[in-house]
Amino acid sequence: MRVAVFNQKGGGGKTTAALNLAAALARDSAPTMLIDLDPKAHLTAIHGTALGEAHNSVFALYQDNRPLDEVAVIWEGVGPLITAHAD
Image (cartoon, rainbow, N blue to C red):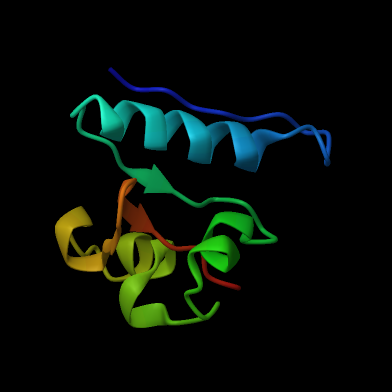
């Protein structure tokens, strides 16, 4: 199953919905992965990862063609996260 949470309007609860959905699915032992494509990098900020770490981010995924499992950071209780990047 793939789920995307998106909307052009800011402040609509997209980050909260995505994080809580992933946590609920992970609690039921469903495989989860979050990919932060938000230009403001809210999921990355909530996780506590510094924005701009190109070696482990969505930027490295696209720019360097690195596999998902190489750029993902583990989020305890949620699953892997592909962090955002300023570029």
